[in-house]
Image 1 (cartoon, rainbow, N blue to C red):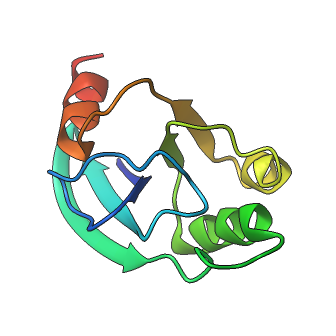
Image 2 (image 1 turned 90 degrees about the horizontal axis):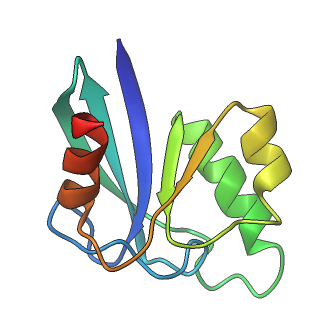
Length: 110
């Protein structure tokens, strides 16, 4: 079974740190996990990072439309919460400056 993770990042990729903001992140690193292994990694630009109003909802909808099932973030997304919840996206809040790879390794170890 495969699962798509969405992670807010700056440059993007497995070795980039998780961005301190969800809606202002420059990119999202999308990681497809299958049977406990990384199958694919894609970096997409955040089209709403400079949006003055409503960026939280727009980013949430953007991630849902990309097929993200787990959102890994350092902050809450109050404005996008209803959208993420209704689409069944699990929000995993993490502490500290970890890289995408470090978070995935922690997840896979349980």
